[in-house]
Image (cartoon, rainbow, N blue to C red; front, side, top):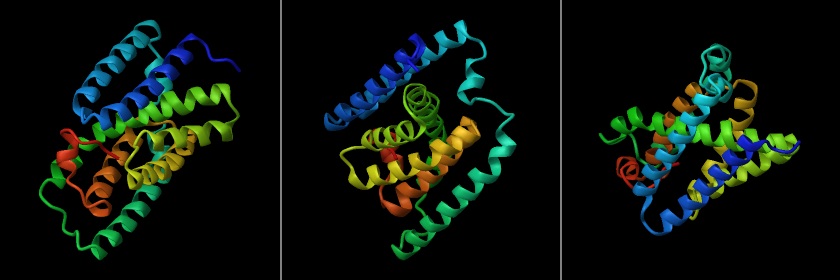
Length: 207
């Protein structure tokens, strides 16, 4: 089914942001790019809300799917956290440093933004133009590519995207997915990658 005007605009926007992210990463200009991208996205969201008041709910900013989503998202998150804890313990990265805790508080905001772009825009619009399997494959690949050229980060992002896309498809709730994305991202950044997430959030890039 061909995309409508909103679908074409949203897909072009998220692809442009993904490409721009790669350029900004190479130019060491991640912070100004993220700020500019946030302004553009918020402007587009405001326009969509003005023209279609119920669009936030259709995107997944809703509460009716929260309770049904708690079990699958909770199981996935707890399982991954357990694996991260084992890895971090083996790598002698426990307990986490003090910077982990403010990261844990702020990272879910970034997680909600990433889940919105990945699920409510990219995967959703691709499903309107492609078979389900092709949309899932392409959205996962593009989400991974957006984290280039950091290969470990690309692999982790691809694996996360492959999991989050079908969960969102069944239980569309960006609040919960964004929160869990932030928690897992914080844990991965310190426990698996062994990097300073606080520094990354203020200008380096994020999983």
